[in-house]
Amino acid sequence: MTTQATTIATQWLSGAGLRPTRQRVALATLLVGDGQHRHVTAESLFANVQDMGESVSLATVYNTLRAFCDVGLVQEVTVDGSKSYFDTNTHDHPHFYWEDTGTLSDAPADQLKITQVPDAPEGAEIASVDVVIRLRRK
Image (tube, rainbow, N blue to C red; front, side, top):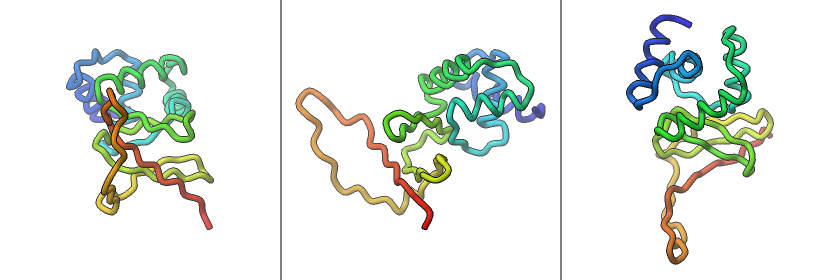
């Protein structure tokens, strides 16, 4: 972990009102320390933090990602109703899901045109529309 990456991660956490604990800083450094957006699963982030030599449990990774979601630092993208990815780009945008590798990437938002969605049922409102485009290699 570089000092600059740790500083970026600490500021990211503090800006959201989260106390920068050792575990949070380690995970945040992996997520945003280089200024690039990430799509991670809890398991992939856990493997990365273990590779860094940090002592963080998988349960802590899950709890920390949930806390990051709760304050708007990351958004959860669910694929197949069971596989969750966490995206550091919190702006509304579509995703490509690569079936052969099980990875998620951003799709160009400017190419997506949604002209109409169904009305919400009585007593409900639409909170968001998630677009995941499933891809497989030819």
